[in-house]
Amino acid sequence: DQQVKQNSPSLSVQEGRISILNCDYTNSMFDYFLWYKKYPAEGPTFLISISSIKDKNEDGRFTVFLNKSAKHLSLHIVPSQPGDSAVYFCAAHSNAGNNRKLIWGLGTSLAVNP
Amino acid sequence: SAVISQKPSRDICQRGTSLTIQCQVDSQVTMMFWYRQQPGQSLTLIATANQGSEATYESGFVIDKFPISRPNLTFSTLTVSNMSPEDSSIYLCSVGVRSYEQYFGPGTRLTVT
Image (tube, rainbow over all chains, first blue to last red):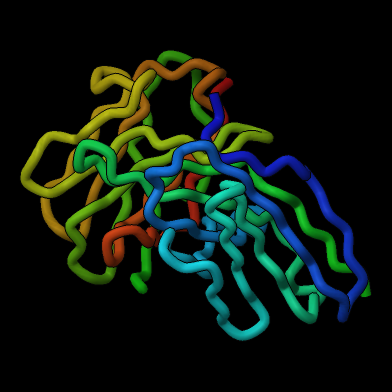
């Protein structure tokens, strides 16, 4: 059973517009949520995180929103640029039983068209 | 952040052989992790490797198949033993920063024929 779900396998956006990537989770005990970007043949790159006690975190063009009651978070990229084209992974941090680890979604492939 | 390198970057191996993947970090870190990403799938944690203790393996992964060494705070190895085509995957190491962030190496692309 997947604890972190990214239901959209792909998303296509025009350059300059907003990209919104969504993520749902099932475990209310996750304490942090993270977004990573991955280019082909590279490891994932950390983008932005949010604590479970916050509802918004912003870093430049990237903003993450957390809705705890809905167990939903989203990553907004404004404005979108062609270099943002990559696979975006949502991950949730678990500290259950003092065993820290990240639980990953399946990823959303973002294409930003010039 | 930390700079992480992995060797080899890719390899093609024959069924039944073993491959050892190295992960080097440019600073001392307590927690290191090994992941697998199979084609079209997400990242799956194989094990957590803390220096000075035995690696902690996730469900479905065993030490005999994926032995891990962690001799110091900047280095770790993962061995994929007695390989089969099902082991074809990208293998990634990462390091823990703060309590929850992880930074990743570039990955090792393994093909087993």
